[in-house]
Length: 285
Image 1 (tube, helix red, strand yellow):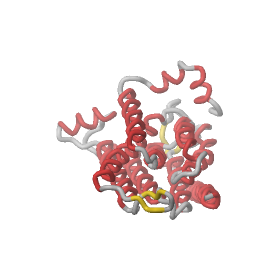
Image 2 (spheres, helix red, strand yellow; image 1 turned 180 degrees about the horizontal axis):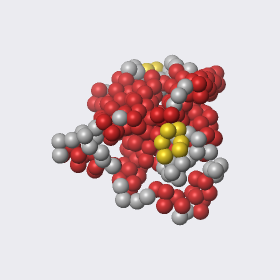
Image 3 (tube, rainbow, N blue to C red; image 1 turned 90 degrees about the vertical axis):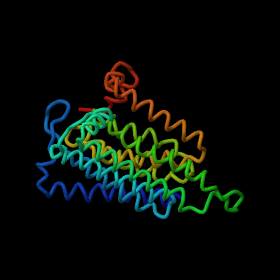
Image 4 (cartoon, rainbow, N blue to C red; image 1 turned 180 degrees about the vertical axis):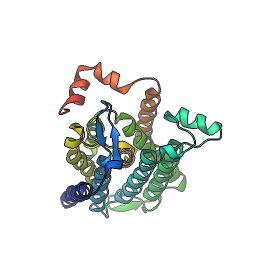
């Protein structure tokens, strides 16, 4: 187990360094965007994050959750790239689920709607692979079979957790460093104990640590590409929880926070709380 953790951390570092070197050597001016302070910031933080997650996760193979994480992370990255770079090519724009669904009612497709479909499809494939490719859990060294209905129930909840996490991390990525801090905090319980997602937890934490400094300094930002990829892997970690009631509680929390984001500003809530504000601003230039 420890060797896989080391491999995951090394893989995340290698993926980050390789992609950062490629970005530094290439003309990435088309990836520049205005930040919340109206300064120029590069979306290449999403590329280094996705590369770090991808190579780090590959290094943890054949861990059971590695392949689902790769699928979910890749789907999130592709969906995010569409929204980051192709938004203006669609006939309509929308904000939040209501905006995208409202445009659809008018017969118009937004980049956000295509992103939702891509992330949702990736989450479903990833969790179906996780729940149906494994023979079953073991108890006292003996395999325990699960009914098809049970696996379908887990797959349904898992897919919503993965897709919801990808979206939620993106919603939280409104200030430098925030998404990385939240992602690391979320996977910490899994990283601290021996379980199927322990290695993935370290990959997420390593990826966050590697990318955090340039994000906090305002040099790079995740964009939808990086945030959705990061959230997809975090969601995969959540989905390794064995108890269906526990998974349902995680899903309910994600849904509640997502619904709240439609009416409440996360930034204002964080700024109004001294503890949350201190953590959120820690290291930010």
